Amino acid sequence: MYRLKYDVESDVLAIIVSESGKLSYAEEMGEIVIHLNEKGEPLFLEVLKASKNVPLTVQVLAKREAVVQPRPL
Image 1 (cartoon, one colour):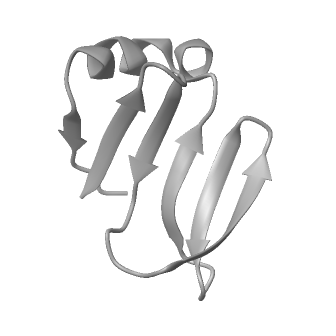
Image 2 (cartoon, rainbow, N blue to C red):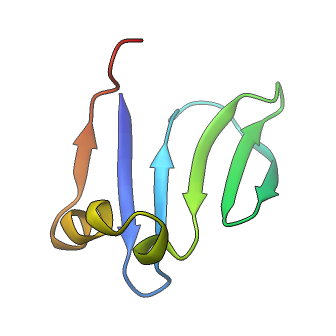
Image 3 (cartoon, rainbow, N blue to C red):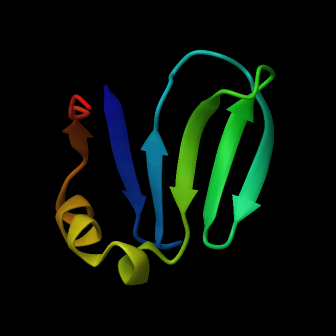
């Protein structure tokens, strides 16, 4: 299960992939920052300038915190 959090003040959308593991390092790719554990597995992603990059999601999350179930591939 993924959790989404939006920080209105910094305009950052966090996509939390895993609640377990220790943060080891981060990689920045444009306006997306991926935070990884020591094995290189993603813990969470940050979308910078979220209101520009994912405006509809931000509108919903600005009103409430949402929990999103991933879709099967």
